[in-house]
Image 1 (cartoon, helix red, strand yellow):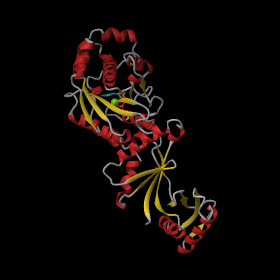
Image 2 (tube, rainbow, N blue to C red; image 1 turned 45 degrees about the vertical axis):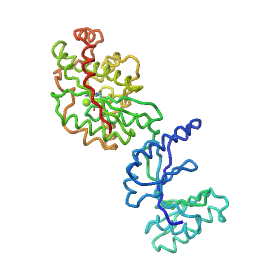
Image 3 (cartoon, rainbow, N blue to C red; image 1 turned 60 degrees about the vertical axis):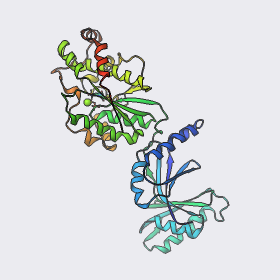
Image 4 (cartoon, rainbow, N blue to C red; image 1 turned 120 degrees about the vertical axis):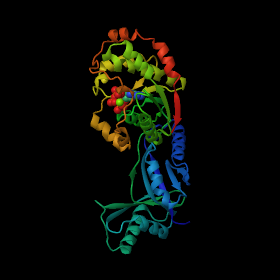
Length: 386
Ligand code: ATP
Ligand code: MG
């Protein structure tokens, strides 16, 4: 057998689910395959790990970049898989070893039939590495790097030197489906990311006020859905126009309630869209106290129109800078800060109501034909898959 490159994938929380482990692993595996679509490779699994092999060397970077967005992966290593033969193991160890610095060989021997025990393997390979590279030293307490040797039961040895962090979390598709209310801002994409990390398959719903908002605003949201898509194992974006609703509120209701009333429409429409597509909850990027509509009173007002589904607000206790950090980490920030307005800024009141009372809101809302306005909005639904 030749010296062959391998990417070792170790999974995160899945192993905790002892009882339905098979179910989780099937989803996890499908997600990995979906993420790597278009790049030739072979994925196998043994003893709770996944091995990626038979890929082209020049694809390694792209493979790792894609795997970094697959939830459920705890760590990864790039290395070699060779026959469990000391000469082959040594050659592989040399190929993952740095040119200089201090190192330690750490051996794990699952194959108990191998003639040397793990201490002896480490010592022997360490000694050969030392004589092959003059600038190396051994430090068993605080080495600059490790050389790991994993002698598997099937007579092969995995040789690698580093652990890369994966995205963690649970495999997407193992925790139901959610409908993310996706604006063009910083918060909502992060909220979608966080629910996907817990294993939820996330679809998106965006409300626009075309022609008050322009096409660039819509393209920006499409771009955000595209950025979210690898984390959510694909996503569908629903777009709904609320222009006529904003105009009607503007015409008939108290100016200070524009945002409050509009948000109640958004939540009602979101629940209908979700229910029609078998989606089990709504997700928003709200964070307590961040803006006028995100007070507990504001949340009460919008929540009270949702009849059955839970509304998940994964960012409710986060500071803005924590959200920004996550937005950067998921590569959404640069798009989120593009200066195109989504619908909420059209007809924005000079002084939005900060703690509106539900009685007052309902009295103002009674001036509108809520049912008719929602029906009209639902006629504008567009779908796009990313
Ligand atoms: P974000 O950064 O996500 O835009 P925000 O700080 O601007 O949030 P709001 O505009 O009050 O806050 O929106 C709160 C939440 O309501 C958003 O995170 C999103 O989930 C939802 N939302 C707001 N506007 C829209 C929209 N045009 N389409 C879909 N959902 C929206
Ligand atoms: Mg916003």
